[in-house]
Structures are given as C-alpha cells and as structure tokens.
Image 1 (spheres, helix red, strand yellow):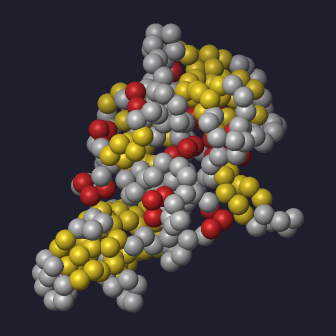
Image 2 (image 1 turned 45 degrees about the vertical axis):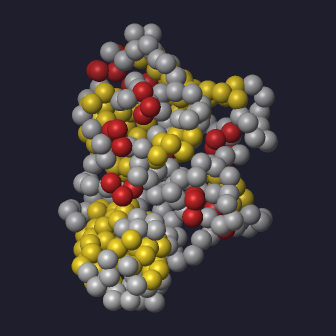
Length: 347
C-alpha cells in the first residue's frame, strides 16, 4: 500500500495491481480523518434517536436479530485522482487507487429504522462515527467533532446496509470495526465507519463534513450554492500501463482498467493511445452490475516510433452519461472524473 499520510492513516492501493472483481481487504484503500478508534465490542452500542417513535440502543449481539444481507459495491474516495489537478490543491494527494470493490455483509438500514418507527416528518438520517478530533483548518468549530454525514430519508430507506463483514471476514479496524455504513453509488465519505449513533432529523443536517467539507459549488437561481457531495460520477481509469511505465515498441500490449458509475451500469469504455485524437472501444469483462465497477481491457499494438505517448480512457453508462474530457472547476478538490492522462514511454 502507498502511504499518503501516517497520522491520521491514509493508504492507497497501487492501482496497477488491479486483478479481479473484488479488492482484497489488505489492498482496499484506507481513509481516516482522525485516529482509528479502539473499540471494545463488549461495550459498544449503536444508539438510534431523533424523529422516531422508539429510541433504542443495540449491542452487536442485539443486531443479529435482523436478517443479514450481502451487497457487492464499489466505494471511491471523493478526492481520488486529486494528484491530477493543476495547480496542486490541498487534501490527500490520491493518485488512482483510492477506490475498491468488495462484498459487504450486514443489516439493511431500512430494517433497523423500521423497528424504531420513523416519523412521517423525517427528512434526513445522520450517521455518526466514533472517530473524533480537532479540525485543523479554518473555518472550523472549536473542540473535538465526530465524523458525521447525512443521507436523505429515501436513500436511507432504500439500499444502505450497516456492514459488519468485508469479503467474508469481520471488518478490519481500519475499515470501521465493528460496524460501518455502506452507501451504494455514493462517494466514500457517506459510508461512515465505526458507527456509534444514528439520528433521524426533520431538518437539513448542517455538520462540518456536510457543508464546509465534502461539498461543491453548483449554479442556482440566486447564484452559486454549496451542495453536499453524494453520487459517484461515471469514470474509467487505466490500471496498466502505469504512469511513466516503459513499454516495448511494435509489440502487443493489453491495456487494463476499471470503470464505475452510480445507480447504473457501465455500458461502454473507450481508449485513446494518442492523446484523444481517436478513440477505440475496449472489451468489457464479466457481467454488468449496478454500483459495481466493470473491468475492461484493450489490445494495443504499440507504435514503431519510440517516444512519449498519452493514454486515456472514458466510460459511458447505461443512461448515456459519458465521462467528460475536461475538469469542472466548480467541483473544487472533489469528483475528479474527467479523462485522466496516463503518460508512458514507448522504447
């Protein structure tokens, strides 16, 4: 794993090792805002409160009354590929590997909310983690804050699970032990780890990681307004060859990668090996799946002439949304899904 930060721990998968639909737990990227909390499973409880009929606390054993569900889902950090932005921007300098696909096992959030009785006035569901600390950059609140994000009530009651297993194993500490949310199709900041509290609210949540951070500008009738990040954007990424890799001239080389989107399936991936002058369709591998990445490959006859070449990939989803050629500056340091240039050398 590539160490992006040691304190708090932030690890990136070297994307060139992509090999198969599922990302092994030890290769799945790790994103932390604060130190990883040390949790004693025997003392841990999940509190449900707010605009509900029956506030409750669940122990880990108490959650076992709910039916377990399996869910395959891709999670991408909202800042993945930030290193491609110029000029350099603040934030963890992710390259390509702050993304992974896993089989998650846990309890449907809708089942738990059904037991506590959500009021008809409910608007959002706030997920709060055990992890906490001081915010280092202004504007900031004073004192320690817990990482927390909210979901619209319709999303919370749809396909969100509270996962206790990852690829058939108990959740590792770095991935949210003993319980984390998995929000299919949304960027990773929504899949809150180390869950300790769920608050059903009748108003819009205005927490730090909902408004000051993990938000982007969007044009509105009264001018630009900040919108909380939510859905992942359609994106294809080249895993091999890697940046600055040397490949032999006049040879057969298989370009490989993955593509993903939100709420739809990947329908097509195209590859250019000459900086965008022409595009060719790649071969999609395996079956299409909603909110699950699609692996792909492209057979490339490398040029006779040695030199520097720029490769790019672009994806199109089942509703016809295609990855953009250029960056939208309103997205700030997040949602980096324009076609990413992979410069290599043919020798």
